[in-house]
Length: 639
Image 1 (cartoon, rainbow, N blue to C red):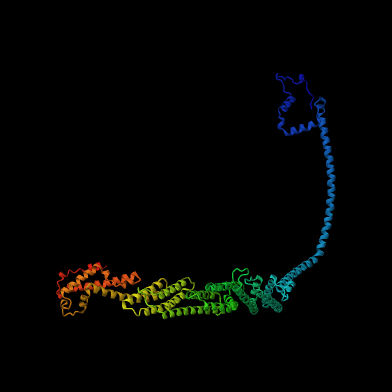
Image 2 (cartoon, helix red, strand yellow):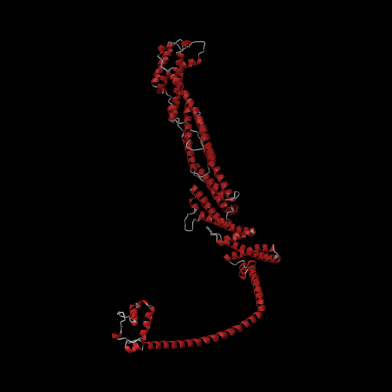
């Protein structure tokens, strides 16, 4: 750094009189004008200078340059020393790299030598690996073959158990496996392994036969134990029955054993239900109600129907949906109850004293159950045959009771009452018929059977009753007979008109009733003609010939005719006083009205004929003197 210039020597004057600019001044001005904070290098230099330039003295400033150069030298020496250390390290690394390069070259040579010597070994290793894969594949195939076509030792123990050994679910799994192996052997027979297939198939066949034999004895023993009233079929037994379907003969023997066990159980339970009742007295023994015929027989067949439904459900678990086999087996099971059933029901049918209605209700009850059972029984079964025979016997007894009743009725024919109403026997018989028909409505037998029944029953009772009425009215006069028979037929008609399927009988009764009503109409009309005075004139009109005049006939002179017309006017004033007393004895108001209406109609027609004849000029009557009323007026008065 330059020496400091004293202020008195800082400037000189040039020749022009201007003050010259000192270069140092210019440089200082330039330095002072410079903004240090914007020059990073200057700041860095000042920062470095501050580390060793700690005191701002004159000596320090004079030695600043030498100090800076000394510091720079020191730094360079340190740098050279550090570079020397790095060089030594790099020389060591270079030596090591050189050694490694030599080792690498040696190893490379050894590797090439090893590759040359290991080529054969690698080829042999590849060949062994290929052979190992082949052996693994063969081992896997052999393992799968054994697994598919052979039984394990545990499976052999299960399938070769003794007859008394208990069977569980594992047995059926092994049986399924054996059957599958036996089936798969057919694939071997189609291939080149026919000998192996035959040997395996023969072995599995022996296993199958042994297994089915064991299964047969086990199932048979289980079937013998199904003797309860409400047996529960174990699932293993159901499975065993399904498996034995592959051996129909063995299955038949097992089912026969089941049928024998269930037949004995059903008979025992049936006898217990009749005589002992439930275990705790509920329900009561059926025979406790033997005095009540309908309840007794209904309870017997109700119990039997429920028992057959239970047996059917049990068989359904075994046969699945084979309805024919279920019906056949159920028929065999129920054979045992036929004899006790027949003995008790026949005794009730033959000895019951409840009357005809009870006999008919009993017949309908048996007919209902006989029609209900074929839905799940063999048509040729003993129990169904027994039920049909009992039904036929009850129907036969019922009609025999009707026959005996009507026979006794015809043996004691009563005379008609004074009022010509129905006799007590007829009323009682019609009440019996009504009760029978009412009980038919409560029955559950098919409609076509009801129709046939009703026609037969009505004919069996009404035909003797009509004969009874005819015999009872044999000693009466025609009018009295007509009234009595009309009343009887009316009661018969009213009794059966309330029920369906009686149209044929109603038509027959209506025809007979109409005939007797016509008789009464004729008698009443004749009585009206006589009492009204029109009778002689009406008779004369029907007997006169065309060659003579009406006024010339005997009794048809104008005076007589006029007297008859006067009498007719009197009749018109009160025609009801001329009614026959028998007409009032008709039980039906409608029949009484019909008789009067039809008789009055005959009077009106007769009067119209007389009116026309008297007005006919050919008969030479003075019509004005008769003061005849028009037929329309007469008809209105009689109406």
